[in-house]
Amino acid sequence: MTRNIIFAGVGGQGILSIATIIGDAATRTGINLKQAEVHGMSQRGGDVQSNMRLSTEKIWSDLIPEGEADIIISMEPMEAMRYLPFLEKEGWIITSTDTFRNIPTYPEDEAVLDELHKIKNLVALPIENIAKENSMPKCANVILLGMASKYISIISRDELRQSIINVFERKGESIVEMNLKAFDLGVELAQ
Image 1 (tube, rainbow, N blue to C red):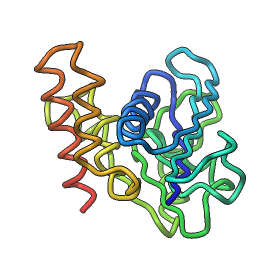
Image 2 (cartoon, rainbow, N blue to C red):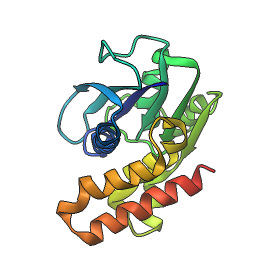
Image 3 (tube, one colour):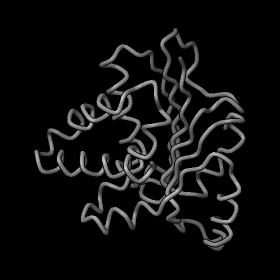
């Protein structure tokens, strides 16, 4: 089994933290992993993208060819659409619908969302707003991970939960618990 995942977002949204959690789970469970990160501007507001390839077989390249991504996980809808040429015909996009206007020519939100909703296999929710409504504003990325967990499938949700503990434990028990709650909320919302 193989899963090719593209992570996309804007600097400061936590998209690479999601990749870290998945990478930790893959490493602990003996799944082969290759990852290539491309950081646009590494500051808040610049585009951030990463390729991650997971497989039960040997992996030779860390880059995902066009048309071979099983999943695009994105914290920003226009960033998700930027990588559409890489999405496999039956692939899924899991994204936030909350836009991040980081360029002066950013299209109107309605136009972005109209284009996004033309995609066949899509899970899209306003996760930034959901995170704020649930008093976990810094956990939107982990809500997104919960939404995507069903589609990752090569790694179990229990393994992802354990990796959330591993990644956040140095920040204290309350941060771990909040992120576990965010993950479970994302799982529930994507049902």
